[in-house]
Image 1 (spheres, rainbow, N blue to C red):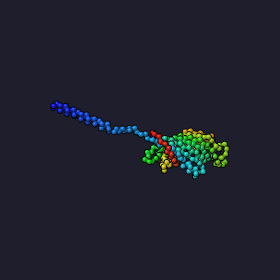
Image 2 (image 1 turned 90 degrees about the horizontal axis):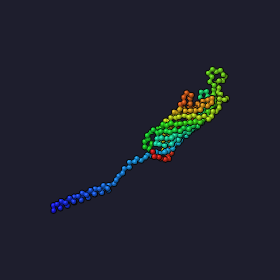
Image 3 (image 1 turned 135 degrees about the horizontal axis):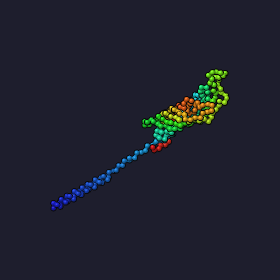
Image 4 (image 1 turned 135 degrees about the vertical axis):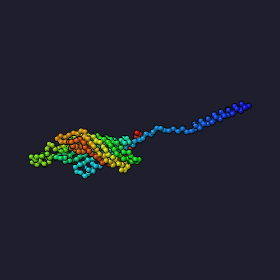
Length: 249
């Protein structure tokens, strides 16, 4: 009889243990399974087109009788900090350089890129950029008049300007190519309206020398001298930005 009670107790304990184990598995099966998304969402780069004009050339044209010019500027944002840049301009200038009075007129374009090095705060979109340009111009020189360089005044009226003859006149269909290093900034004054300033160091690569004359001034490049092929220029721009798309990086 005692053995019977012992077997009954063992069987009851075994059944209770199995039922508890089964309930534990049910609880584990009822717990929600949380899956973590380990895939990082790709950031989107806003694409935008910005365009405007150089205020310096427009202002100078209004207040100078010897200069007339304009420059249109535009850039396309292709990455978060990278911009493709294009500048197109036209200049006409009359200058007196030593014994020579001349007029240069022509058009030019510059193409390259800018890289924004400025880390903006939230909600601010200013630029401090470095860039490069490859530039080309098509222009003409007109020799208006010149005076003879005579250190021993043998000829009478040697200091009078010569404005007729084979040396005077127009030299057309001239061209030049140069390289620019650009440093500047753009500040957002109002929503999508920017005021910018850029300084340029120019290095002349090649140019066509006119007959019986020299290229003293090149549109877009600025003054040229015989001693070196370097020049400098700047622009002061007002531009408007149009955001139009985004792409994943």
